[in-house]
Image 1 (tube, rainbow, N blue to C red):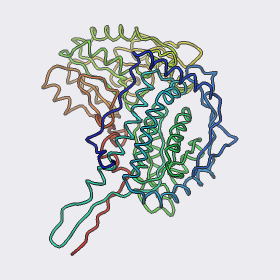
Image 2: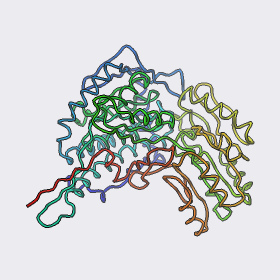
Image 3: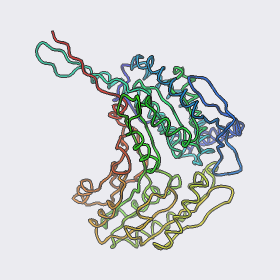
Length: 520
């Protein structure tokens, strides 16, 4: 059975069709059911042991800030050390489990998540402020990661068995696991990226220390609970919520930590990379860092483009999930001959977006927390000095962290709002004299994650493919919404290590090649 689950049998998980009343009702019932759990205490999990601590993380609903989602126990430095030792000991047995057996755990987990998809969506809606479609699509992506990486592991095991041999020799190349990995997922995709980072390490034979984002720990716990339910051995995933200042540096710098998988801000990613580069006493390896650190992504529109499609893409890419995506198209660079026309279309479309709670399925919901709220509003004030505000700039309902979709135009390429990642519902638009200058403005950033180019001119499209410097370039479509196995995801420069999540090659980042030669 498992041998038939090759990469060529993979298909992306279909999203829920919310035009069907029964699906909407099923999700609403799941939300109501999860509401019965609000305020619950959740434990640390080390070696399968559930540990409740006095010190807690309080997870709140960003759409209703007086509502507590749950209280998550926090690890201290001593517990972190126990987790590392547990993962190290478990690695000795887990690495010996056959690859197809490890893959089978992922397939079982994917099946169970399908059955519980609305339950997971409900947590994402209440804890992360997502609307129905964004939450549901994230569950699909989590399922995709498990299905795709399971198949990739089976394929990798077969593909690397034999290499070219010479007379009187047989050569075999295998990929073996690394060891203990520190998994640090973000809050904006707290299920999908948490799942992808963790299961890619686990299926390749590694053991893990999973530290969820502090503002979205409950959905990460639900994932770990699912892996327990399908029978994953204790100690393979050790769940260690807590403060980075208490144990993050400790684990990153620990001599038994073999690799770090991180998705988050540029500053934290660079700090992890710097710390991991230092060899601790007793350390026997060079640590690997797989980092995805955000972007200042942009869409270029020339005068030959379908302007209606371009405007829709700009608005969708900038404002879906409140712009809180590393792939969000927070910049638009438009050639001057169609500049005013496109801006008019963008403003009209963006003004139609309704702001409100994700639980009620509004297009634009709350930003994640008070810190993000304050940071985004500060950038809006900077933007008012640097460019022309043409839409938004205000807050919404005081019951949550709501900010109106905001648009600035006539921005200079080197301005703060064109250069720095805002990570909120803020779009900045700049004018270029022609498509070539537009590409130059696009490339004028320290990031290089996603980009878009709208044109009907084949020669220009080919030039854009050659010259726009980013890990994921999309022609005549949105710059968000990468699919596992279809759009391998990862960027250049200070966007990260170009690790290409959702690709076949991704599993090699958690493995090391071992050749053995037998002479006859």
